[in-house]
Image 1 (cartoon, rainbow, N blue to C red):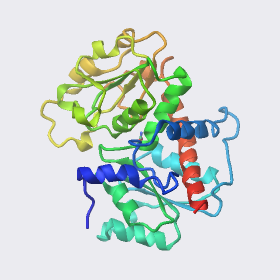
Image 2 (cartoon, protein in one colour):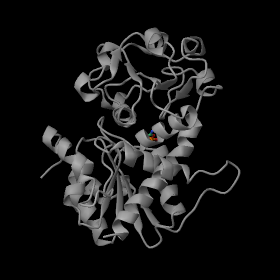
Image 3 (cartoon, rainbow, N blue to C red):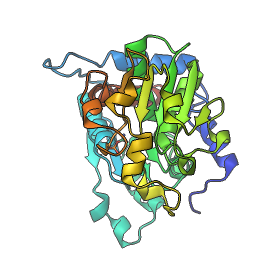
Length: 332
Ligand code: CP
């Protein structure tokens, strides 16, 4: 058996993540999570935020639980924030070093999972370059094990989507009438998929996805979004601008992708370009950033930037998600 990307499996993934009582058992995708549940998770995350300079929020809700971080692709933000989130909730946290794990000796992903399951790991946080892997694992673990998707190919990055909508809510307070512009390599962006799903469920006014034609998404993958290739038109009066890096690791053929200078000239978010957006625009980036390619340093570090706030929110969101699946486990 191997991971699969068949459409029916992706549909099935949406229902797999809730238990019979409607509680979050796995977090695989934001698709299909309703507005009430998304709002509850954002409210929970807000409670884990404290002022910088004060001690971070802690709880003992996961004492006795074990979390394993399994990152089969590189990560700084997601991995570090799941690690901190688990520890701040009192859990034991195992960060498996994939490069020195027995997967390098040919062990299958399921055998790795079964090995950790036998060590009484309760929650597995999984990042993988292949679509379908988190759901595949979720279908094969025991009833008391939760799987959290920490980034799946170009398909889904649900905790990133949550932290992004939380950041937008903190600044704008509402989603209706909001114009959100996501700029860059939309086609290969799992962040775009998840944040689009979250924003659509929460009733965003207008979602614009702006990219060179070679990096435009399949319209069916982002229903309701405006797909554009003119950055100036896409930025007009935008309340939120999110820049994306070019995901070279997911692009087999670079034909049609502009060179760096041309890309920055046409799709880079510069201070000059930002004047087209609303005066109180916020600028976001999920990271990692390539300064001078998709975003100018003056913008990344400027007054409109909320990029470091996204990172802070990432820990709070992951605490909220871990706490929620912990409650699901406790209620079994
Ligand atoms: N945004 C994001 O997923 O960053 P990392 O790859 O550093 O985890």
